[in-house]
Length: 395
Ligand SMILES: Cc1ncc(COP(=O)(O)O)c(C=O)c1O
Image (spheres, helix red, strand yellow):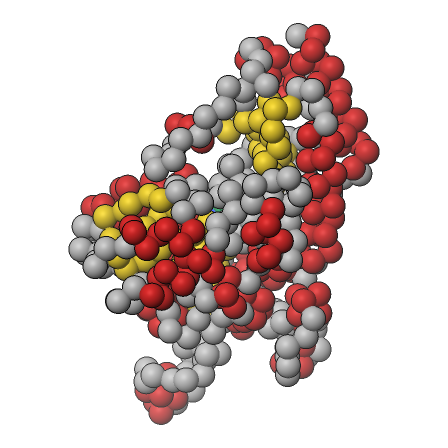
């Protein structure tokens, strides 16, 4: 696109070039490994460095199918470029491997996605990279945790499972005030690049499990890593050196999902807030964890930095025996029980952050449920939950 447009327009048009594909609205799906060159000159030119981000030399180095998606996500994130990975978790791991080396220290938010923590404790530790977990609410106090070898601060906001909102500008300011270069990386999956633009706030790298809202239909695993101009070369190099690639059909489905992201997110947001407010008023519920609710501890920061909320939130129930929880969950008609989120269907699963955290303690007496508000009718979802609470009372 020739200039910056309003967000809904950008989602529909970013990265698309129908004029290059005989007018077809969507990009062709290139199933390509070998790329043929007509002459020795052309073959040798393809081996030399180039400033053309859309040069096609080998399937793994980019095709017109991958460029549409990576250009669109980079534009929405406000990055200088973007690479695609086969899952959200691989986007986290490739970003970290690109920016860290043996002997470095990583500051990782305690509320990160659980498998991101496993990657730090396993692979990074094996490579001689030490991880310190920090309280998501540390804010400017992160400066006390910075060491001479701290190379990356990783954020995820709101946090996985418990939805604490981080003071992203305060953490960036602390990273920039250090007397050596510290990269900042964020897992921006909850808000998607539609509702939060961390690179515009000064974060170097923004990671998406595009598996969730960008794909939106629970049928593809894919990740994106968008970076500012300073961090991009290290990310592109790690991605290339490790031979990371993603199937073209999955890229295609992801760019197709992206085009409806804003209308889907508006509905996820509306339904999520409606369910969260309804749950707040229920006697079975001790606390709802949703930064979009005015009385949530993270509401002020969320309102300052985000332009919307997705449909993922939590609710802590008053203590109940497991049989009552099972009676509630097992009979739900529309809320499926399963991992992942961001699709068109509603979900509800119990979560156990107390067994994961190390820098902070998550203490509640009752079970924590994670809800994903899908695109069903709100009244049907509320009826479903109300019937669940009746079963719970009867069990
Ligand atoms: C916040 C967050 N980041 C990353 C991931 C990983 O995404 P994927 O399942 O595509 O590897 C998930 C998956 O649930 C997630 O919730």
